[in-house]
Image (cartoon, rainbow, N blue to C red; front, top):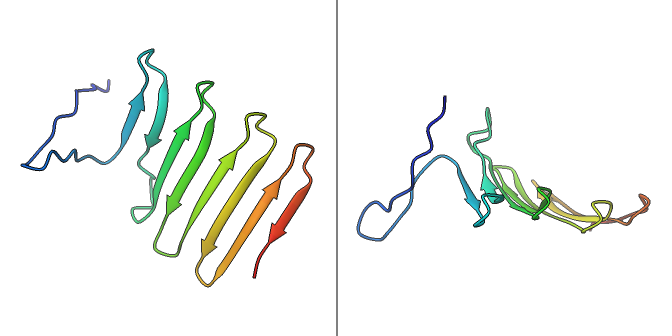
Length: 104
């Protein structure tokens, strides 16, 4: 059984420290999350979650690259901006699956 305790600031600067966190709205719905990524200690993933529970914005960073993704309200359209090592790309997907890819 997991016990959830309230977070408290540590130190003089009001810093919260932990290995993962969730932000919840007054109704108890998760609205943002930075989960632990098992097996990927050098990867950070932050998700902003729509009221319906679907991640709308994802921000990721690792030792080799970083990315952003934005999902439309219909869950069928999205944009991914990614820099992976020496490569970068922008992928846009419209409802119905039509894709546009931009890379240098």
